[in-house]
Image (tube, rainbow, N blue to C red):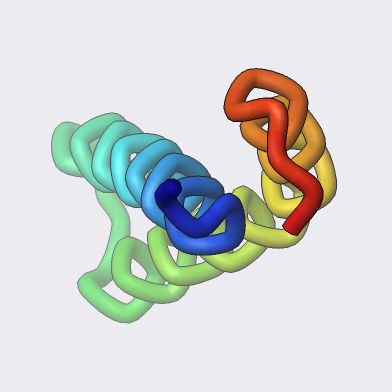
Length: 68
């Protein structure tokens, strides 16, 4: 059986990468410096991870029916 933690980490990291990429693409047409773009992208990635960790893990645990 797959590790619930590993599956969860792959899911919420993937979603965070996509969110950060969308942020980066959204800032390209604007008058932003590279530091602002990269800093904002990192910020979105980190905040997405923080928010998604406690949300995704129980959902994966429920879906896989495991205990740990």
